[in-house]
Length: 302
Ligand SMILES: NC(=O)c1ccc[n+]([C@@H]2O[C@H](COP(=O)([O-])OP(=O)(O)OC[C@H]3O[C@@H](n4cnc5c(N)ncnc54)[C@H](O)[C@@H]3O)[C@@H](O)[C@H]2O)c1
Image (cartoon, rainbow, N blue to C red; front, side, top):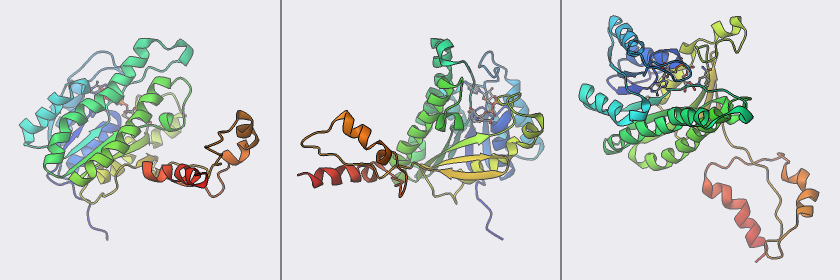
């Protein structure tokens, strides 16, 4: 038997935990002995309105099962207030699960500024606001875990989700840099791209599949990423339906042209197949590794 994954007594904020995936994360953290701030504005899937009962119900569920939780009804746009509530209630914050989200799906040619702005505001700015407020506390205590909720719509694209996809892959960019900045302070940041049957995905897939993609099938990964055992940082995982996998960048070996003489669009065209050939591809992990081929090319033509 492997040792239990430890989140006992950790103070965990889960945003958007009044339903769907966030609720399942909050319940599992609480069942494992964490103290949970159940945050949810309680609006519609499009981000309209507000209702305190969403978070309150999840808190009641956790308490009924003998767990420890408090409700937070602020929008993630008010990130500092959510973090303050964790500090007021439990004296610290250890784990932050950025999960709150809305949808404003529309083909790009029909998308208006408010569809774009609202989605970026909740997913990208909202995660920024809460994380920025928690960050100094995580750094100071030399321990923290931040989990961002990305999406396959950001990684691969999806019709009608230009706003959502941009915000979601933006969160992966944020994850990568926070992993670098947090590492020496014991603060780890990772991202998940989940697929689960929630109000957000209802009607988008056959009912039998929807029912089997239970939100609870995402949470074990999230709790692991929030635990003492997790040592990975800056990583992205796809998860759903009981399956978990890791995603990484892949880049072709590429083609080096003469940087002194310069090169032409025709040379690009002539070498197109080789530029895009993934045979023997590389998987750069950071900026330094990513620049190696370019630097080697400069050295080849002094
Ligand atoms: N369900 C999926 O298959 C799927 C796929 C990819 C990504 N995601 C992401 O997972 C996360 C959870 O989504 P879900 O499927 O559980 O949907 P959901 O609508 O059930 O949950 C989202 C929750 O966030 C809350 N919320 C919205 N705006 C908020 C705000 N400003 N402040 C605080 N809370 C707010 C909502 O009230 C809701 O309870 C989202 O970030 C979503 O984009 C879900």
